[in-house]
Length: 161
Image (cartoon, rainbow, N blue to C red; front, side, top):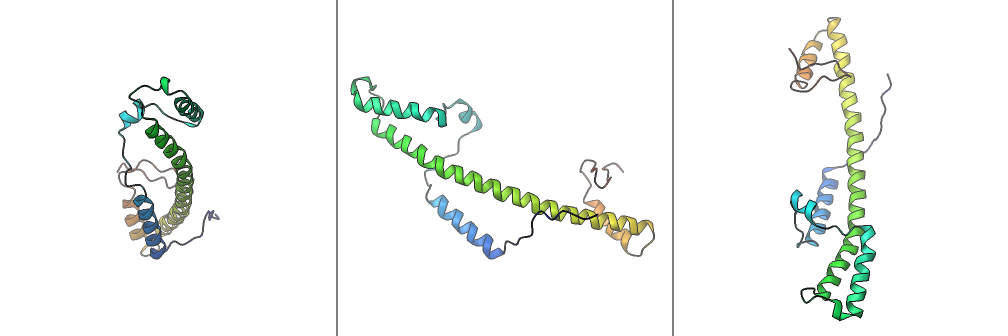
């Protein structure tokens, strides 16, 4: 059976080091970044794409009609927050796109590697059934790696002994 080769690429230790250095540089541009809890994320009002025009209008009218601005609303901070949202939306979209690409590529490479390992394992199982010397050790060693995992339909390995 011919295996699909979804990706054929290398990513050297040097490439990884460069990527990590670039990520560190990006993080350095964001020293004020915070981590919200899941509860906070659920309860905070969201300024999504559909609400940005609303926020733009609020700032516009706050500047045009200062009498409607509550004393606890700082228009300069409002503008700063709104500008921040707009700029980081663009960066965030690029980061999400890049993260998706890296993840999908890693999944494809992992799938290729796993299918190759399965082909060797299944071949060794067949060879062991025919009494080929040394192949039972391969089956035993690779089979141990299925311990604790659910039934795998591609190999037929089961966790029950």
